[in-house]
Length: 268
Image (cartoon, rainbow, N blue to C red):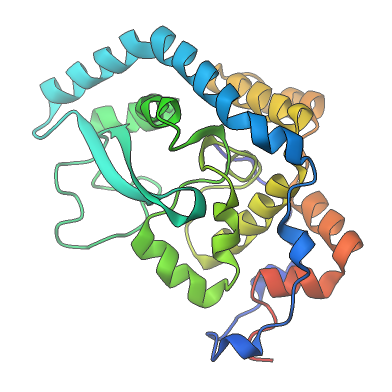
């Protein structure tokens, strides 16, 4: 789920790896704290109730997708993978399989790419419609994920990303989500520069998580799934684009904080 946005200049800079934690500038502790603590406290319960309702409604689609996967390719219908949840707790995410069985047997953990040759013909349809994501409602019902939140990352990839984005684990303050602000306003990850921008968007969401923002993300997600007009939906929902997120954070804590969060002060 992505929308093209303007790309600020600072994310194009090249960064060296962190030499030591003492090299990092100090980011205010309150920067990572949610503004609406009362809402972050009740959100898990809301997610479980809504997740259960959606799971019941979408179970025929999930079952139909699983049968189609089994009939069209070798291997299991569902794809299970270890991801990082809240506070860094590991959990097993469940999706409909969209790639050939054992797709990473030779490559190891890697990001999927546009028109990935490992994707099956049915898998492309499931990915384009996001039906492959529906089984994650099981993770929502069990409390491992939320409906909305940062994308759950793989432990192996998260460890490597922390070299370039030292504060990356701050996004683990909340449960990861099936959909989220960063997934909607930015394109899919293809390199570390994309991850930096999504990280900043995730931190913005964590700080500003509230019923109105969640309602906007939910509406936008539903409209996307129903193939609504991108421009009309974006104007109506008024989701903050990445540039607006960057400027908002910079106005509150300064451009140095933005650069530190994205790792732009390393090696300087």
